[in-house]
Image (cartoon, rainbow over all chains, first blue to last red; front, side, top):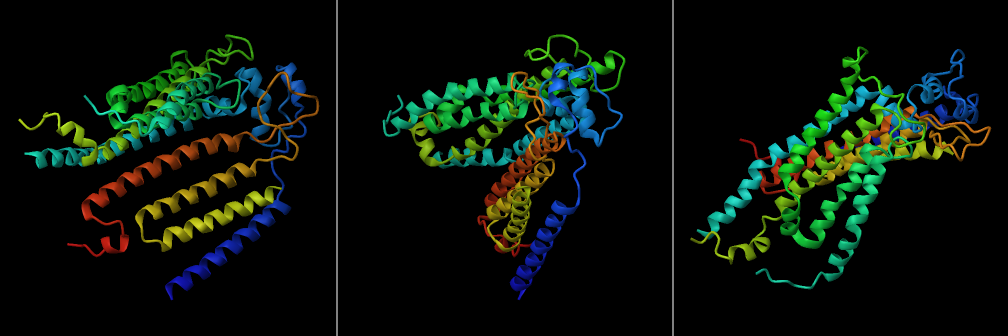
Length: 121
Length: 161
Length: 116
């Protein structure tokens, strides 16, 4: 009884998801079209650009990137310069996960070595 | 003396050939973070796969003799402190937090080109490298508490005094 | 072409939910959590795609006039999300190790009966 109810709920969820995704693909336009930023001109004259007619944040970032940071990799410049605060939080998550694993497994390491030592005495 | 059995000779030879390859490729991906796809996170995971290769070829004893967990644990904290110091350079120069104040040194397209982006890249690469390597050594050390691994150690008479 | 990515991500989400709710082995539950993470990362990356665009890197020797970029902001946010998924999986697996040492079984319905 519970399992049939679960399967019916998951089928409703999947069909609603597929319907909404096809509606999003067909009807909603994407904000950053990208066709009106000529990348070849931008790569050779990095200092003359205009951001007065921008459609979204991504077009401003791509136009100002070579002039303000002089980094050719746009994704690295976003991760470490325009959004460096998020990378700080992610470093803290790495530190917390590894220290948490060390604290949780401390007693089980001693239990493994302590049991082997007790067997030999 | 330890008993040397040649039952896993092929694994040892292949691990000897592939270990320097993984180290060099990972360091290349970390260093060229700001001019080609990649960066600190991707290169750090590539370098930390050397710990697994050592464990597959030489067992837990060989891996623990080469890599010490304490140095890796201290190195991870050092990497986090370096990231915060490079982000505080903006405040020391008088601007906001996490600002690129060294961006005007170097040409576009060099390795040393974009100021604090490259320095932060190296700090995060060191942090991921040592962090994931330490986690792998921790979990592999749990597996080594079987009686099959402890048998050569007990027969040496270390604890039966 | 992006419709295939979207439908695949929705299927991954549904599969992950099914695995998390019906399986009894706690390691299989952790695997289901990982599958949900992969589905979400796929849908975030697929949103910022432009037809005919190239990778958002200024390679000086390969650019031709008339090229344009795909959106670089969702790619930068997915990097963070992947690292978070890996860290949560590592913590969940260490808790699985402690559960096995404490109760001696990997079956979650047997563990719930040991109260008191």
